[in-house]
Length: 98
Image (cartoon, rainbow, N blue to C red):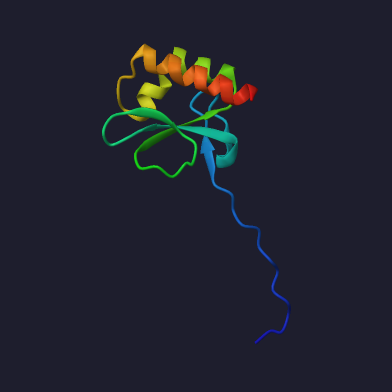
């Protein structure tokens, strides 16, 4: 048995990939877009709601890339109406500014 002091290990921070820029970032730096089991598309601010999620950076550039390439639809495995995409975009921009 060794009496050497144990080194503290850093807690591993979860990482996710942005569907816009494809960069890996800390989960806390990203916004989760969620498709609920009922089929509703919304922003999950807690990151804990049930459903299929896709992550985006908090930038208009990443949102625009994901929208143009239909990456949100692919990641969430469903069609997303333009009205919902526009509402999510507006909400993300408000969060980014405020």
